[in-house]
Image (cartoon, rainbow, N blue to C red; front, side, top):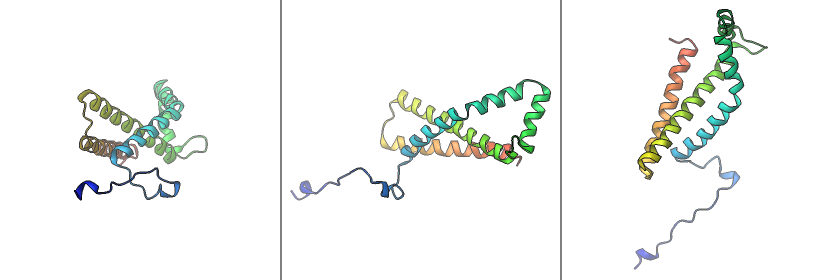
Length: 142
């Protein structure tokens, strides 16, 4: 009878002062980053349209477009524009992989805690790994 009277933990909302020490599970991190990546892609959409237009208009505009990443434009250095493109790459990759994760979970009814944890870790590893590989190419490491 002593086992049935064991007190259960009480979960309450966290206070603002506890945010720094609070540990989200990987699925929570993926969820928040999915929202952030969506906002990032939406805000950088004019930049993407400019890049597409500048790279496809003509050979001269393509040369000017590629020169922007070395010389810069409008007072912004080339390395800063490469960082913006790197953020955009991460946003797209993370949003796409997390979206595929959600579709897979919906299609297969994979809603267990263990499967959510493992698919979240895979999402984080893939998005960061692919971003590092493409970032190395962007910055000319290979």
